[in-house]
Every structure is written in C-alpha cells, then in structure tokens.
Length: 280
Image (cartoon, rainbow, N blue to C red; front, side, top):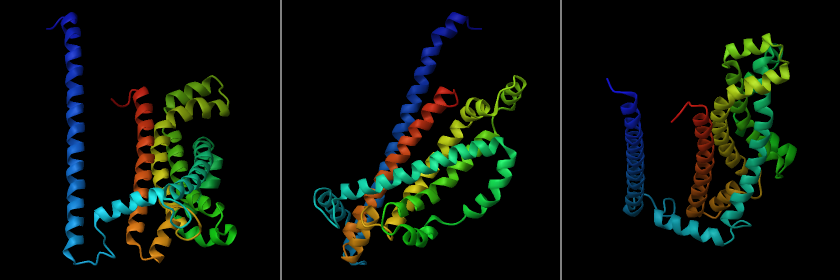
C-alpha cells in the first residue's frame, strides 16, 4: 500500500490530470461547436447563391452581417440597433425583475405554509398554461404602446418558472435541518430565510435561467405588437419595408443578448454549486 506521504505527493498529479481532461473536453466542445456553426453558414450561403430562394427573402450571411454592422451606427425606425436593444433590455429588466421579486418569495412561502399552497395552487395552475402572447390584447387595451404592456407580458412568461423552482427547492430542503430548527423553536420567518432559502438556491438559479429565456422570448413577441421602440418593433418596421436583412440583423441581436443573459446566469449557478461542493 502507498504511504500517506506517497498519496499526498500523487494528489497534485491527479489534480493536473483532471485539469488536463477538463481543458481537452472544453476544446472539443469549442471545435465541434465551430464545425456545426460553419456547416450552418455554409448551407445558408449555398442556398442563398443557388437562386432557389430569391435573395430578397433569403439574403446571404455576408449581406446580413453588413446590414447588422450598418444598423449599429445608423438609425432605423427611430434609433440604431443598440438603441432598440437597450429599450428592449430595459423592458426585460422590469418584467423579469418583477417576476423574481414576486415569484421567488411566493414560492418559498407556498413551500412552507400549506394553507397558502392550497389557496394559490389552483389559480396558478389555471393561469400558467396561458401563453404570454395571449395577454397581448389585454396589454394593448390597458397600456397602449407604453412600457407597461411589454412588462406585463414578460412577467407572464417569466413568473411561473420563478415560483415553481422556488417552491420545489423549498419542498426538497433537508428534513433533518427542518426538524432540528423546529425543535429549537425557530420562528417561521427565520425558517424560511435561514433554512429553506439556502437549500433552494440551486433550484432557484436554475429556474431563473428558464425564466430569463421565456421572458426574453415573450418580450420580442410583445414588441412585435404593443411597442413603438425595441428590437421587435425594429423587425416589424423592417418587414414593412421588405428589408429581410434588417429582420435577420434583429434576430442576431436577439440571439446574442439571450445568449449573454444565459451565460451570466449559468456562471452564477456554477459558482453557487461550487461553493456548496456540488460541482467541480
């Protein structure tokens, strides 16, 4: 058998091996991702230059990128691409923030108070299956083209995952911790903030990623109808001007911002799990 000293000396080598494997796997993911992206662009280019689809309706990737760069510094439909993205992000921040502020605490409370769970669950289950875009007519009637309509629709899309994941996180809290806290006479407020909330954090963060994706998608749908600024509005104006490159440039902006939001939340999730020793 190896002595403790020998085991100790071997540990750095093991750690180096794990790091090397992690780097190798990361490089594989990047290479495969680039291959897939390159294949997609190649197929798109071939389809565009083949003439099977008129360039008016399917411009080449180069034309879309050129238009994207142009819109970064030139105004279209009342603003540059950055102006429209910023307006969309402000609406998203309002709706998503409201969903988090209401959904997470309510989910934790429902996970602890059975009476509240019984009261809210039937109504929530009935409402959460209504697509966010179905709220557009009400948003248009109540708020017109102001900021309230898109925020309402974003909230409708982002709220359910926040509540559900906070609720599930509270329900799956370690029962031994709950029993120990109850034996010590811990009040409900401290039980929720010091026992349920820390236990539910990984589930909450995972729910925020889902919520952010649904909220961002809901925002674009709302701006197509009930907004006078924003990336969705810019795309509608591009459609009206039969500018497919403008529409596709807007889609690139939507995808990029959505990817950034997801990566940021993923890094938060990984950091929290790493601190809890649940990931490496």
